[in-house]
Image (cartoon, rainbow, N blue to C red; front, side, top):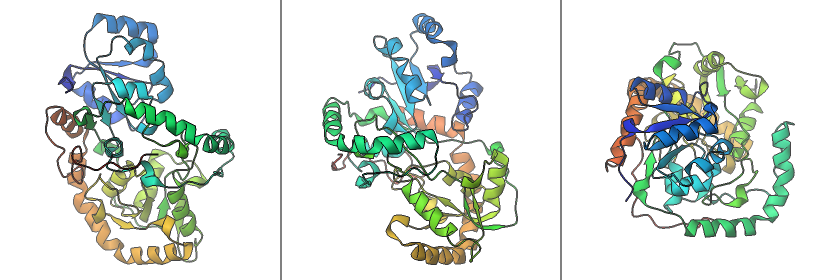
Length: 385
């Protein structure tokens, strides 16, 4: 059993995330509670001196993989730390393995580790992944893709060895979903201008560092479903749909919120990763229903705000027909969003999320308003690679 900790007594160490919208609300909550925080910008030597002076439990908060890896010399002997991770499939495994607690913003990390669901639901990716843009990172991933695909058997054999050494105590796995601040959302009524708003990325490449994420997904576009859904609807732009597409230019936060509020529907999926992206929450609270995919565990309320379209299984013509059907249901789904707004703003406030994490450490199950059943026990294993 992990040692119980009191989150208010921990030292929370975060990276250079003062402007990161995913991190900012939670860091503000820590500051509101007068909880000690530190920043990696202080430098390794200053952090070493700080850790020598305290025996407090340290929580690594929203740290990028490369930045996390630089902290290895500070914790390899000390230990006494936990880690809060977002994209768990790219997190350095040493920290996940040796942390007292692992806080997951995405419940898929818990489900995959405990064998309840295979990563990406065992999607079979293409051998070659075409870059969406001529950006250097996209081009590099496309170039490396055939090489890592050929190396997959060896890489997955290494991952199997790491899994055999893992500590799979469910009590170590804490769900700490995204939080957001009501004042960050301009909750004003806007007249619909667009039928569909594509306001998210449609290209996502990663290197799979975690042993529970098969090497077959290295440098694959894991937003392929988003891309097909967006491209299929935009194919019918002005005949008959009016569309706003983020890929055509940069959006400030204010412009992004305005575009969401001016859209009858937005396109939101968790990608092939089935991730509970914050856009589900933001768009629902802005009163705009969505087309896309439901999630296997998070956001039990989402079926009241989203018209499901499984883009990978449909042709563009079939997607057009489904979207026309969705438009018929838009007034009802919009009212559902508005009716849920006050509850969601409270449920996903930083204060509520902080208390949710502490309750789990204290042995309480995750309430049903957050997940469709806490699957930490009793699930059959699935093939992971």
